[in-house]
Amino acid sequence: MKTPGRTGFVLGLAVSATLMGVASTGAQAQDPKLSPEAFEKSKTLYFQRCAGCHGVLRKGATGKSLLPKETRKLGQKRLEKIITIGTEGGMNNFDDIFSKEQIADLSTYIQMEPPVPAELSMAEMKKSVKIFVEEKDYPTKPMHGRNWKNFFLVIERDAGKVAVVDGDKHEIVAHVQTGYAVHVLKTAEHHAKEKVDNIGRFWFTMGRDGKLTKIDLWQTPDKMRVSEVQIAYDARDVAISGDGKYVIGGGYWPPHFAIVDSATMQPLKVISTRGVNVDGEYVNESRVAAVYTTPKESSFLVSTKELGQMWQVYYKDLDNLKIVQMDTHKFLHDGFFDPTGRYFQIAANASNRMEVVDSKTATAVASIETGKKPHPGPGANWVDPKCGPVGGTTHIGEGLVTTWGNDPKGHPDQAWKICKKIETDGAGLFIRTHPNSPYVMADQIKHPEPDIQQSIQVISKKTGEIAKTIRVTKEKGKVALHIEFNASGSEFWVSVWNRKDSLKPNGEIVVYDTKTLKEKKRIKGFFAPTGKFNVTIRIDHIT
Image 1 (tube, helix red, strand yellow):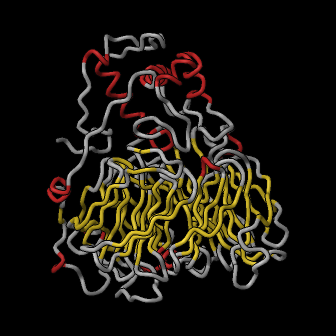
Image 2 (cartoon, rainbow, N blue to C red):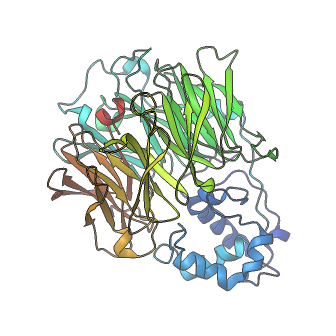
Image 3 (cartoon, one colour):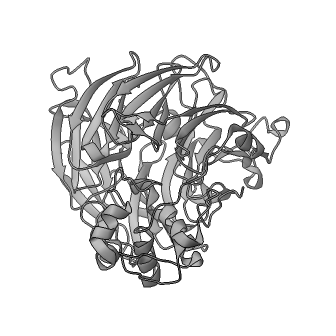
């Protein structure tokens, strides 16, 4: 079986010549056909750009179902138009990424029966383990004179790399090879019950191709990638146990999660997430979107997207693994803890809700109706003058930031109730803040208009109103997304992403002063930079 790489989603698919038919770019919906070459290229594009929202089997989740019975009703021309210009409901335009031929072929491809992906066994996972630096050769102190606790790790999506950036000197230290289109990076966090030596030193990335990579920030730049393992063919999230012993990776396909030894990267346990959803229906594609370590318990939280359940997985005894299943709503995607680390707040985005689970009691405690398709990314917590402590989210489906009270102990009357709904210019994916910032920052990447998707909006914590709109870039085909603060909170960084694939540096990070909101510097030399993760911000879980 071939392993998927940067260029596509292989999955060991067996597609018959009858299914593909003869070459016919832009075929009619009644008899959709593509050449074998066009089929393979469209399958790759679908994986890279569409499967995350619409599903590998195209049954829909955050995005609509793209099964032939739905897509053939729309027809070739309508599908091409939607892919070209996007929608204000949260789908991006792709005219600046795909050629007209690619759009035509992809429109035909989604009118054909979806190919059935292969499975991935534990034995195959174990064979995929690669050690680049032996554990006995790990350095006992940093091999550079840099302040590694203010390093930023920046996803370089299209190149399948992560850039390590010196936050003090604003310069790139290394480009570390990882899986394709890394979705999330995580490290161990300060944990109330358990202690980890040299916390923040080791980072684990999860690629869209299911490759889990271990990075050592103490190494010289050429040796920072120390090991890797493939836990799925399509994946999204990763987390490290409170004691630092285990890493959990969540798979989109196959729909499962894998628990891996953090030192050796050997898979130890694989649990399928197929099952019966909250509506009583069996689901074959129940993807794991988010996995988090609970700060107050020795457990992981696992979101089973299509089941509409949060699972609390207690990792102290892997042979007798205890899992508590909590019913919430579909389709669970991304979330964040409240400031106490007890309550996890996660978007059930297609249900237009934020769900809240109590990690101390392993129970679902609240369901908050928000705007259309909430998507908080790594989230944001702050103090509102009226409501007290609140959490906030952007939305994929509309230009809106919704906030709610999240302090049931100190402000019980406000807990899990809507505090404010703040209209923004466009739909977005990420919201961030810092205790030392008077502002909350939200991107608007999901809006199809360039002037909006190239800007971020600055919200005043004091008034709850838009204080400023910052146009981050005006370059054609580029968008502004994902905000991250430095360790002290004196700066916030915004990615400028060229959405058209390139193997040459084509993006930059823009650094702003938190108080004045003025631009300080543009750090260039990135390959399609998207998410950014500051070491201190993440180990201290500052939102």
